Length: 179
Image (cartoon, rainbow, N blue to C red; front, side):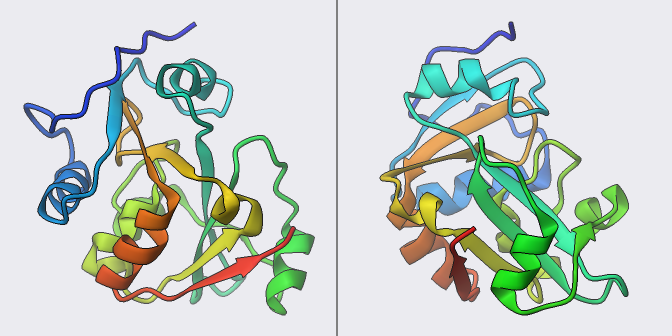
């Protein structure tokens, strides 16, 4: 069982990554309420069980995908307990099969390491061209739980703030699929 702090509603005293700093500055400047925890490194959905309990929500699973040519990249947000089936994802979008992008591309474009992939990666200029895709089930939840860009910090905010504030701010449109 991993250590998870009590929920906090303030900004971290110091930032561990540039993306984590961008994430909290965006939330603060746009007056978006959130709760956050600090925790031992969490990289699997199983690691997130204690985080989910502490924040009273379910952490989403955010996958960074690409086409075979590695020219089109997708940030797919789905329910943490839902298995990812590439065939269903590709079929829902009407595209060729995708696979997981490399750890190097994840760091280069989204600004995280494996296990810390987050929707807040859209704040980076390097992520300007990615396609954002949401599972319908995630859009229907009131709360959105995700990494803050690290494997040692997770947060909870309203899903509508992600869809109606973060994505327009980053100039990303998104597609909703039912998989």
